[in-house]
Image (cartoon, rainbow, N blue to C red; front, side, top):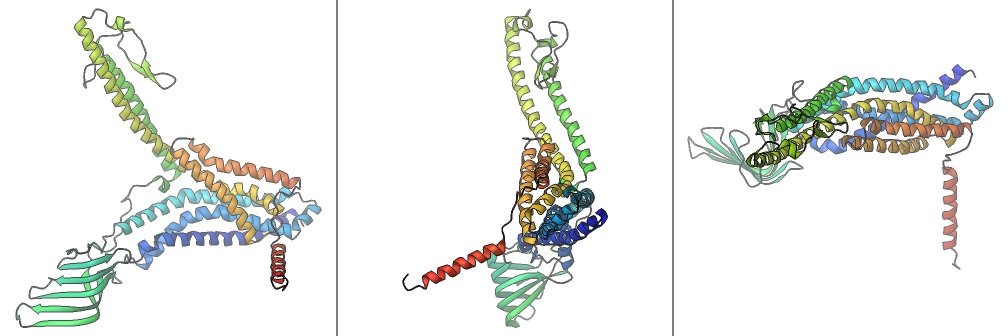
Length: 501
């Protein structure tokens, strides 16, 4: 078998498990998403197309997480199966080095990484932004259950609605009374045991469905006309203007860091860096003004804007350690030279006042600088994540190939189990690093790349073990385990049925 045929063979076997794994993982993410948000979406009167769009937009981030894990699962399944079928042994006997088997997988991993990087930078930000906007539109949709238990509500013009009890989770209203004031010649009062709101298909009307009640209607023109109608189910239509779902226009909400491309985030970090430098300069300028006595906030330490001993005004600048100090230091005796006792007392008071004002100003700027640094770190974390997460598709090749070959047994269970373990470790490092970087504990570059570096080192170690043909991972023979359990159960049954026992 030539090298090209071997490569084609491996690539063709990887395609099926890869796409199957992607669909399976995304299905799991989708179920988790629906379990989390379904109760917030059902009963909102949203059209089917809106729900489909919302799910479709959220599939973007699911794909980003599913692809790296699917790469690892597919590699473990294919190479585990090849090893179990002794294909690897046959290829080694034919003179094919195990590292050559990694070449087609590395090419595929690199291609997948490139595609996912483009997806992360071009498609994912817009999908996240549109999903967030749609979520906010749904959340900001005027609720129809602004009815407090035991109080009359004029939520709907021309009607007064009263409910003794309201279940906010199910949207059911109990012991309902409705006063209809929409007509000037008659009044209608409807009572019901329970009711709920829905929307018409065109979203133009709200429908209140009432159960087990009666309708009382009196005619103001001829007061003798009084009609009572009992019903089991009755529907009342209201105008849904102001209650329906309305879409926001493009740009209605500002974008967060997960809704920006790398270029946009770099522009933001550059702007934040300029603000950070301006904050630093403001501290220097304020300190210099307070020392020299030129600030409008109050007099400085030196009366009459007196210069320093060398004749130059005092100025402030940070030293190499980042702390602030006087460029030209002086002693109290030199500063107070030629001053009367009263002037010295005034200068001492002013010095203490300047110290307090400067400390308050620095504390205020410190809060600003801390907020700016936190924002910069958040953006840098997202920038590095857009590089590191797609590259995981390539890094997992170094782990998957040797692990699959040495595992000896392939299949969905083996591949999913091993890949889940590695991906959990990878994800713990990624999320933990993100939290530490956001707090400024570690640099963003270290936080976002440590998972890839550690995984790569593990992969190199596994490759060396593979070349040395030392078996590091041995999966259990489940058939043998099952046979042993069956024999144990049979033996125990035999003991329990023995009369002498």
